[in-house]
Amino acid sequence: MRIVAHLSDLHFGRTDAAVVDGLIADLARHKPDLAIISGDLTQRARASQFTEARAFLARLPCPAVIVPGNHDLAPIYRPLSRLLAPRARFRRHLAGHDVWPIWTDEEIVAIGLDSTRPFRWTSGKLRTRHLDHIQRVVTASNGAACRIAFLHHPHTHAFGHSFEALVRRDIDLILTGHVHHAHVGLITGPDNATSILIQATTACSTRLRADANGYGLIHIDMPHIDVALQGWSGEAFHPIGRFRFEKRPDGWAELTI
Ligand SMILES: [Fe+2]
Ligand SMILES: [Fe+2]
Picture 1: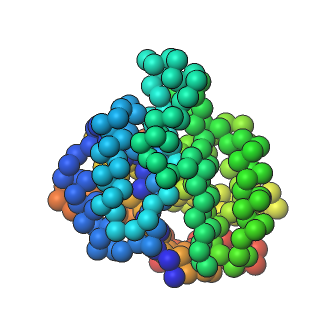
Picture 2: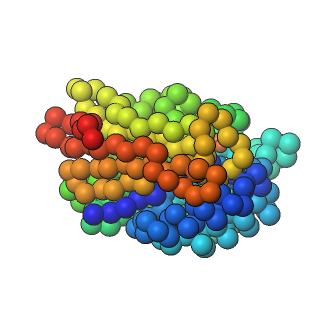
């Protein structure tokens, strides 16, 4: 069994310190094996904001794999950096975190895809090279492991290839962020193949839209995956939603709980 914490859209530079402390406390309580962070660690890719993000990563009770979000690229008001080296700050400040991260152990294979586009601000892209990369990693991985793809942009914002292409490549779980709105459900691809889609809200920033701050705790014990959404009440994180899925010969099914 593995517990994966899915965090997104931290936005250091625009965070609430009480929520950040509450998040660390909740993670310490649940002891995840791995944290997957699907982008927007900073508000404006400033050095001070990456320093805060790095300090946060150091406080996590587990290893983390991360991909950049649109806010982590060199900002548009620095057009030369944006043009020539949009991901240089991410790489420099989060040394050791590749923009194409992979985590593998006996039970999970997590593949990070950098969906950001330097010449667009809010839309992302799932490119052919992402899909080729997925195919290579999946082919080389333990067939019984749970396959996870994570990227910043959700289905509606990742232009080009749609997420059905991930379903076709036997991805079990797709984790995204960007829209600051939580969603858990199934996505159907060709031949009725299915993957589980989990979109996280912002974990700790004050850039709230419809949802409170929150994150996902994903319990993986194949062929079952349980998702617990944790939400900020104003004082602490509490469970606010539970979902259970089962992998069957014909694909993933959502169970009622
Ligand atoms: Fe964001
Ligand atoms: Fe974003």
